[in-house]
Amino acid sequence: MSELNAKKGTTSVWAGETERFADGATTTPIVKSVAFSYDDLDEWYAVATGKSEGHIYSRNTNPTVHVLEEKIRLLEGAEAATSFATGMGAISNTLFALLGPGKRVVSIKDTYGGTSKLFLEFLPHYNVEVTLCETTDHEQIEAEVAKGCDILYLETPTNPTLKVIDIKRLSAAARQVGAIVVVDNTFGTPINQNPIKLGAHLVVHSATKFLCGHSDAMGGLLCGEKELVKKVYAFREINGASLQADAAYLIARGMKTLELRIERQNASAMIIANYLKAHEKVDSVFYPGLEEHPGHEIAKEQMSGFGGVLSFSLKGSYDSVKTFLPKLKLVHLAASLGSVSTLAGPPRTTSHVELSEEQRALLGIPESLIRYSVGIENVEDLIADIEQALSFVVDNQ
Ligand SMILES: *Cc1c(COP(=O)(O)O)cnc(C)c1O
Image 1 (cartoon, rainbow, N blue to C red):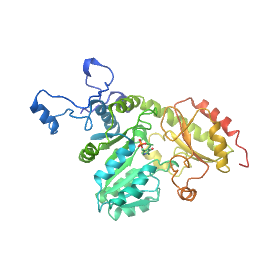
Image 2 (cartoon, rainbow, N blue to C red; image 1 turned 90 degrees about the vertical axis):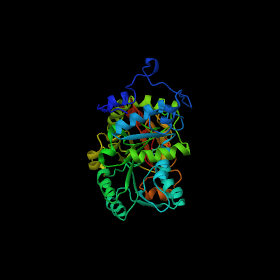
Image 3 (tube, helix red, strand yellow; image 1 turned 30 degrees about the vertical axis):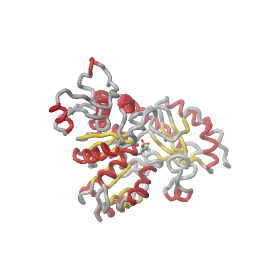
Image 4 (cartoon, helix red, strand yellow; image 1 turned 45 degrees about the vertical axis):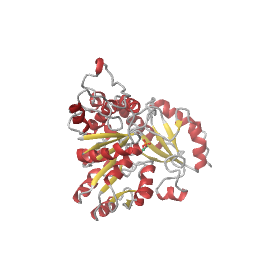
């Protein structure tokens, strides 16, 4: 494992690829082999027992997958990294490997839907105590952490209202009680935000989103302190939620343009947020880049860009959303985010479909909210598209 000491754009391209590949290939070979052979039994034994570097069996490690792990490790400034079949694979393996009966985790109400299901259903089943705090109530989170906990699990900015929480402040509180800080950095991306530099022990990613960036592969990543990553890796190696070489190749390939895409998406999202803010048919806009966003000051401190996802609500009822969304032409109405093409949808049919209208209201999610994940299209075209679609929304809907 080598350190590149390069900037992020360079790191995205070269991490894991500085050694010459077989035959002088200039891009990562997709190694589909399940098992790796050794002529020398002593060498085989040394690799199998972790005394030498090398690969034995692709459920554990694989050369193509390793390239991807190196990219996230160096981009996040971590000691070690490992990978999973999906983002939920990364999150569930991390929580199940590091928690157990009698342990306690403190988190927030606004985590990703799947994560929140782990907290509300699966972890309590194994006698893990789960406390979910109001997402931006830093005092409440600190007070719960101070009572003692094993993991503080954070996600910022959150989905879909882009709430921002102070990673540095809460990591310091968690470290005082010896808790491990885990941050889901999917929305931030390593280009805009590096939780480890702010005090987190571990970072998880749904690589399916911005890292892959093309909506054509799923994966999950974990990086951070070596001993902790090793513990989670040991669990994943046995439960088998391993990433396939083909998917790892697509994600690593996507990551080569990560900085270019994120810079573009940051800039376009900011322009679109300002455009929507001034539109008479738009009620509220949620984007951490806007000065009036309640998390703006914290975001400015801990992020170098505000990300490619924003959300906004229309004046009127859900009917205005039903009129507006299908009129958009430059968008896929779909559940995911972070792709080169713009994706949009209402939380009530995507991320928060399992909640009732009252539960969504309690989370501060208006029924007429739209999540809009900005792609890399030209922003003038996206705005013209929104403009024409909004013209179909009539006042009394
Ligand atoms: C999508 C997502 C996940 C889950 O990732 P999958 O790859 O779909 O399993 C976790 N966290 C956040 C913030 C996400 O957006």
